[in-house]
Image 1: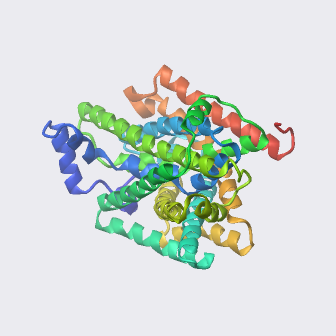
Image 2 (image 1 turned 30 degrees about the horizontal axis):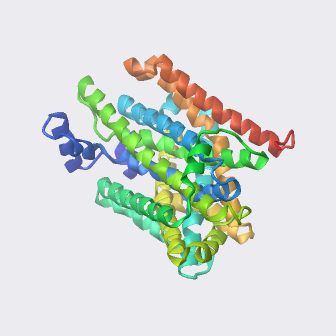
Length: 434
């Protein structure tokens, strides 16, 4: 993709490029060698700790205690695997996942995938946008619609930072990720977590009833995000064009390290969300289902500091993840149909469902949870496309997926498909777990 046509996917700024060249020349070592290559996975990791994760993890912890921690771990392992492969696709081919789908798949399938991706983008933004708006309305005692307007302005302002260099946007998003991480580290010191029980149940994979199945599907959808699979390949495709195979192999190695670290941190934050909810709510508030209720319940249970920290992390999560979601939406449209729309219009279109949900009077937290289930149902499309392209020697050459990696990716996709099948059968009343 010509980076000039998509301002959010321009090549790295000149300073990081120079620093990357110094690393490959052997003039930087240790942590100083990793930092210039950091960025894409950090940006993508925001998708794994967005307000949809807050909503689904609060319900999971409150209702089942530590019983669904294993789902969070499995979801993050799958996420790290597929994000590493998405980054690899961009580095090896110089193209992103949406572009390659357009080039190698039949036109009807391409249009179908684009339509599904746009639905997923709206479901994603529903969670991200409403989450930040809820937090702003609660912390400043504003009407929800004012919180939504402020969130929209903050998101657009963050996107405009990219005009001064994409590295600055990466640093800003990284800082917001840091805010979320620090907030939940503080919450773990405040919440009464039973670490022994948590460790025990972490190793016991089971789904207790039909609601646990729904929440498990939501956790998968909230963690392995469809738009993140498209975005990661776009962020790496122009970041550092390798001059030869030696450089390409080293860039891939640094990319894998960054994915492991960034997605590992995102996974720990998700675990912290469930641990906090289980410790604070499971004993006496198992039916707690709403973010607003969680905030108001935290104050008498753990004190006002815990409640404020919770909202600060939610604001940082909502603004940063909504920004990343808008970037992904632009990439998907350009990749699939070679078209773009103005950034302000993309922002307006993707946040319209949020205003509709509020206008119609739906419970916003329930809407957040269901948006994550929608993402879980749409997820197999980019997963299968990624598996198919990575196994194609014409696309990947010597870097095509090996046998054992193929088995791991197929097993992950089958797991997601099986969970989605259970979810759909329950939705249509075919059966119910007890």
